[in-house]
Structure formats: C-alpha cells, structure tokens
Length: 176
Image 1 (cartoon, rainbow, N blue to C red):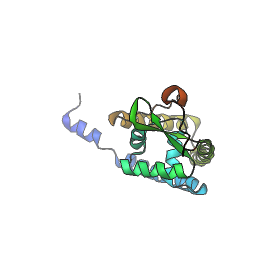
Image 2: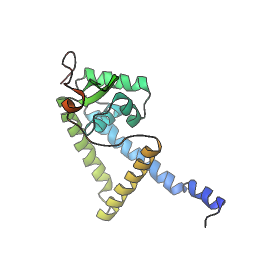
Image 3: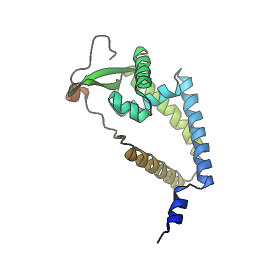
C-alpha cells in the first residue's frame, strides 16, 4: 500500500523524464518549423493543416485542439482562408458556430507537409527497434489521450461528408 509520501513522489516526474520529454519536444518542434517553413507556413499554420487533415472541427473545437484563445483562432483561420487553404461553413444545428474544413489546395498542402514531417520524424527514430518505435508511439498516444480527456478535448478523427451534417458548403466569398 502506498503512503501519502509515496503518492506525492509519484506525481513529481523524475528529472530524466522531464529532460527527455523537453528535449524530444524541442527536436519535434524544430522538425515542424523546418517543414512548415519549406511551404511558407508558420508552425501554427502547419499544425492547423495537420489537425484539419482528418477532422472538420468547429471554431470552438479547433481553439481547444490548438490551445489558442478565441481571437488567435479567428486570426489564424482568417489568414488560412485568405490563402485558400480552408473554408468556414455554418453549422446548421447552431447558427453561431462555424465548421472549418480544408479546401482542395489545403488538402494537397497538408498531405505534402505530413509527408515531409513523417520523413523527418522517421529519421529521428530510425535507430529505434520496431518494438521501441511501437512503445514510443503507444506511450506518446497515452499521454496525449489522458491530457485530452482531462481537458475535455475531443480527439476523434472522423470526417462526416459536409452535405450530410451542415448542408452545402458556402459559395459566396468562400474557397472550395
């Protein structure tokens, strides 16, 4: 049986775990930055494309997924929309909400970005055995899933055909 002191110690991660996760995060952020820059994107725009490649979130959901405030999310989507990468369409069930989706150009760019990031992350993990790569994947996923559940973030990756959920995509002034 654990004593309160043991429980307290368990909640404080070992320095090696902290150092390892911070250093790994730094490496991954550098990969994302280089890949995004190669497509004339900011890291945040690259993250946006990554999120939207397999989801059609509302603006509110997107704000949570990207950990942004409301005005930053709106600005990000405004810039991506002007560039022809995303479009917003009203959610019929909620007249105040908008769903964000990739345009065809956005899908192509997202696919190219994901391919580049995947290749570069693959280089980071090349020296790991298949078993350790699988373990790393499972551990990273478990950490992300636990964090999302604790913060009410929906990580589902289903895309419903737009016409089935929220009607036709807007035509006036919106990119298709």
